Image (tube, rainbow, N blue to C red):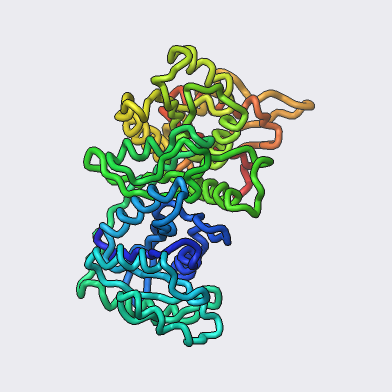
Length: 435
């Protein structure tokens, strides 16, 4: 990336995610009193005094622990540091210097990067214990209170002072691709396989991914952003105020902000109500999508039968595109990006008013809107008002009489004449005098 990268590092539960959210101005990272909530790297753009940079929140480092995820967290922190321009080393001023802080300091000194030592939780700015942190040997400690927003500006002043004198902004727009699905269907494994390196923690334990992780990706000379999300369980299985509750909200937000959604199914398990519910949310959000059937190396039926079963389960979005892959073997992965490009192109497609009305007139010649209660609705003309997803307005007399069945008929006529596979389309019916 052309932007400087600032990594926020420290042991667990010192306030890294709270600091991250304060700087970014919104609640991007999950904040919770339970140690070890942030496991993967979380990127966000930030700005201070006219300088833009990418801020990275990392998992808490506890080198002397039996936590099953700690080796993975350490690996992710190392990856973040390898790309960092500046390190913010966050410590807890309320608890003082700990052996875990000393372990982190030793790790950071090896990186040969600028380090800004930040002492958090000094809510009353009692600096009695501040000077103890000089013993870490990583520079002058700077006092802050994330909960009250005190001292953060001074920290950012020092951070940007380490940035290169000239900052180039050569960002390229890319398609944002969001992976969604139930827990443990292989979303993170697919992301890792596509990017060719271990960028997301992968585990057999359900719920390993809690944050939505955005990863820049380039394929066939095109730029993309891959977004890995937390596994979505049934709503009644999730406490709304819990960490997982926030993860679900984050996953929903990621869907809303995506360009294309990959709905990941597990070929070794039956298609569940939750799979269908997730697909329904993507459909309602108006997002182009691809159904990615992962673990096809463990298949239980052939592709034709599986596709027919999907057509029954996903009858509300019969426009879906499907591909069968294995994150374990890599088979079929190239088809994913081909499908992504196709459905995004279809969602972005615009039809001229002339062509649209030719399709409409052919549809009306074959089948007129049904009469109801002696009243006959009439469709005058249509126009496309937007794309992503394609949205069409039909101007009518008595639009309230155009029933759902006739709307589906018109949608099917549009799809027969124009390739809208993989994307929902929206039809609106207005009175001919409506504005």
